[in-house]
Image 1 (tube, each protein chain N blue to C red):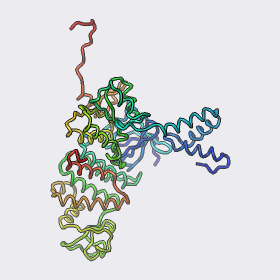
Image 2: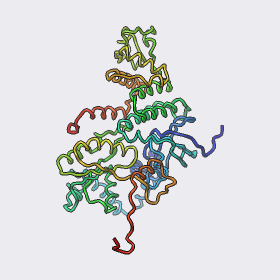
Image 3: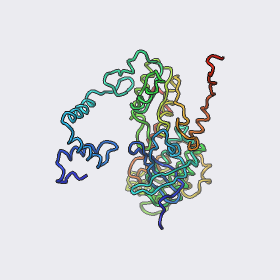
Image 4: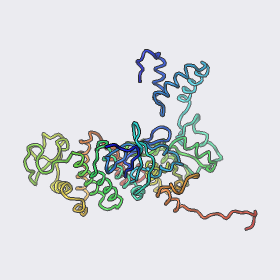
Length: 213
Length: 260
């Protein structure tokens, strides 16, 4: 970057530099953001700065599920109405939001904060696996749902977890693999299609005239 | 030769990394162009038509469009998905090791058909299942050969004398075997058993089908793995990440879950 250029004030250059470090931000975007902030009303800029500081100071990891939270235990873990015998294991905190949006799950979560990626040198010790095993041993858990991403790293992580959890006598399940809604059979790869066939389900007769059965 | 903007090639996906919002940069090994990098746009979305085809270790037919920096994948279709490799953690970790070695040892855009052939054969052998140990050692020896790092197994790398069949050492940093006299000066030389030397030579000289029936007992298998891995680490000047995972799985399979 041209931070030494005399055409750019030093504080501004520093800000550009900081933006540049963020994911998905290239040099041009960094400059645009920095100049945008410069023209922002001071109060808004203050609010942004405060929000950044607050997120670093107040957000912690839940001691049970490892999700990011303001209070410990987090609101999901302390919610008495949830099923405390099922844990859904996800890769990242954002995955919880996706699953919550479905309103189809009422159990607890566990965030691994990553996946096993042997080629990148990311092993089990870099994830929150020890914490998960601890929960499985101390709490009364009937089922663990592995909701890692259906790609190579996610599958490797799921297989590794299965090896560890199955001997504890807890039921281990993983999310179904198949065709995405809005997808196209013609473009499906063999693995997905084969799994979709394996996991096919009997079609429920729809109840057109109310209670006929 | 002028290269068209759009071209098609068979390829094995040997590595992927995330890029931007929903893209990935893939490393491909191709029969005709060697190792290349290509961008796959939007493959991290669930509705991507290509993501299922572009999983690491897949063999695909890929259509690429020349880009300014990296080529962009325009279309693809799976030819071979090695699903049995993916469903077994041990086999999967071994094939990732194979992919990592290929990725690190071969230079970019240098055509290397023998290495492509070797990678495919090795993945198929690992998927078949028996003799995976031999398949891996054979792969290491051959890839070193093809990458220009063939270990010397006939003559002492110190004094050049023919190795006598009783006492010999393997010195990764010196590039091969040494006699007892040269071993102390060859930095990190470790003793190599006679059977170890014989198997290494046979792997280097003979094609795979002559080696496939070799059966190694546990100490010999361990010795060969140790020697070849230290040689590979020496050549790459760094550790092989996926080897650590293989070791870990092996260690943990001997433990009860309570000890993990």
